[in-house]
Amino acid sequence: MGRVENEQKGRSREVGFGWREAAPGEVPAPLAIPVLLPPAKSVKQDPSFPQASPVIPAMAAKDWSTLPPDLVRLVADSLLATNDIDCYMCLRAVCPGWRAATDDPRCDASDPRFRPRCWIVLDEVFQSQGKEMLLVNTHTGRFLHRQLPLLSDHYVMTTTRNGYLVLADKSPPHSASVLNPLTGVVIRFMVSVLQEAGSFAVLSLPSSALGLTLFSDSSHKIYLALPDSKSFVVREVQQAPYGFFRKAVVGGVYADIVGHTVIADLCRSLMSLDVADLAKLFASGLRDATDLMCFPVCLAGHMLLVLYEKGSVFVLKKDVKIGKLVALDNIGRYAIFIGPQRCVAVDADKFPSIEANCAYFTEQLGSSVHICKCNIKDRKVERISEAADFVKQDKKFVLTADCPSTIIHLLSGYTVNIPDSQLALQQVP
Image: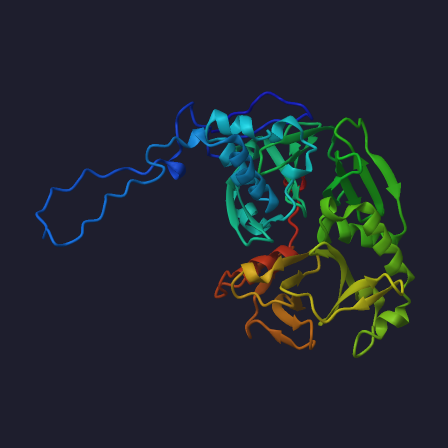
């Protein structure tokens, strides 16, 4: 469609994705009224043979646009319940009556119902396809290809853990904006993106507003701005808390779901653990605490901590009775993917070939990377394949030439790669 509508409340606008709204009275092809075939020529039948009455499709004489508003809203709410916001947008495009019966995401950019929560952007596909990106719903297992014409006029700084795209204008001073790829709503910020190397994230603040956050690994500073902020607010934190919060916000958890108080509580619990206590979890002890990777993950509404160190994976949950973190041996139907950059949990029932109650992690040997699987219950570890799954090229790990591109490889690649921003690549001499 490629059109840009006028900015609405919340400094938002909508971008076309290849669908169009139907004209009044028009019905899109997927929901078209069944076509009645012309009647066949009559054939003489045996009078003793019982004849069936002709069946007329129930909706043949009905217009989809006449569905009661309550029923339309019920269908719309079911789509929002699974975070299938793109389907919700298609529903609203059917006819004026259906749009009138449902809320417009452009009218309130802070409405949590229209925020991507269960989606991740598979960056490798996104980077290779230019204006096209591939998303996957980690709760339902549904893949979605999306065309984004807006990317022609912007640099992609990053794709965030909760499904947003952080963009920068191509012309100086490179003002920042956040794109919801499922609704097309763009939230523009007054601040310009910082040239300092770091990782961007989009946070849901207690006021329901969305905040843009930059984590600077070199200075251990955290920068935060609201859409109307004229400059970033800077917070400098110690190295250990900084590392945890960076993993939590950038790589491990949905900020929209758990909130900042839960992350802070987990941070305090983790900081209170003695290295000797952590070492007891690992059969050979904890050789070096600095090698320990820790990600917070939300499963079925519960906050868990995933620990990984050289082939050993543990999932911890805080026991409120004793006030300590304890190791779990069962995470139900879920599976967890762990990498040096990010961690993601998926519903294994929705993804063929992924085993439940397992953690998948990457093991690097020189320039080669193997995908391994650890059973949470018995701690048994095995490789997915004997041959290497990834090889390192420059700063990126790519699939080997003879390796199939399965969902396990796509999700593992997501955890090991965070591509550089397009603006940073433009500034490399």
